[in-house]
Amino acid sequence: MRVPILKQGSYLIASVQSSLSDEELIQLSDDLIDKVSDVRSKGVIIDVTVLDVMDSFATRVLRDIAQMIKLKGAPTVVVGIQPEVALAMVSLGLTLGSLKTALDLEEGLSLLKNPLSEDND
Amino acid sequence: MSKEILENNLDSFNERLPILNDRDIVNIRSKGRKFASDLGFRNQDQTLIATALSEICRNVIEHAGKGEVIIKSVIIGKKIGISFIVKDNGPGIKNLDRALQFGYTTGRGMGVGLSGTKRIMDEFELETKQGVGTTVTMTKWLNEFEY
Image (cartoon, rainbow over all chains, first blue to last red; front, side, top):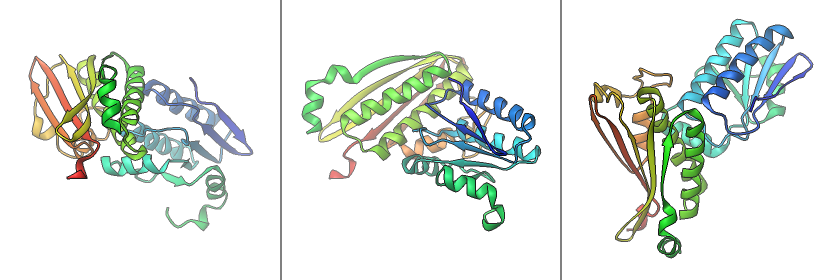
């Protein structure tokens, strides 16, 4: 299933609805890159609240998405990583690099609106 | 409690699933999670188990094209666990030491798959022969700290 991408003001919100196969993750990546240019987005949020597994492939794709979108001039924030998923990622040795994260959608939006208030850049 | 459940339903804890495409990875890890949950693993361990399965099954798709996984319960003495045997008939791993090294990758991941999975499972064994295939056997114990 394709991940729906909603536009809210000048931000894009990709809200993952179910577990994603590798192909669907790549699709999300392609869709986001296209859409960021189309709507001249100022920032992207990827909501992964429903994901019960983030393995090395998913993590790499998210990192790549953020990197590509950054080259288009917009920041990406991943929100909603579940506590047990976070634990598994750390146990596995996965790192997010420069990928920004926030607790939930609300925090993610405020991070995009006030990037200077965060010094984790 | 879970041991009684297990003994009554032993058959339902032995399942062989094909690994043919990336959709199967999603299916297998949710099955693995469900079995683990039925055995009594807490949510955090279920997630670790599902993540480990995901990593190993993806290796199969990436390097061998296809394979299969057997999910089963194991009882040894007082210990109960969940075990996965992931098999393929692919090219085998050329340099095992390197493959097990953190950060080394020939594929699309981040090079933490094998080393990380080894760390999250309690038992991890990898057999590989060039031109013949690779088998990973891994187990997570439910009550390892009971002794």
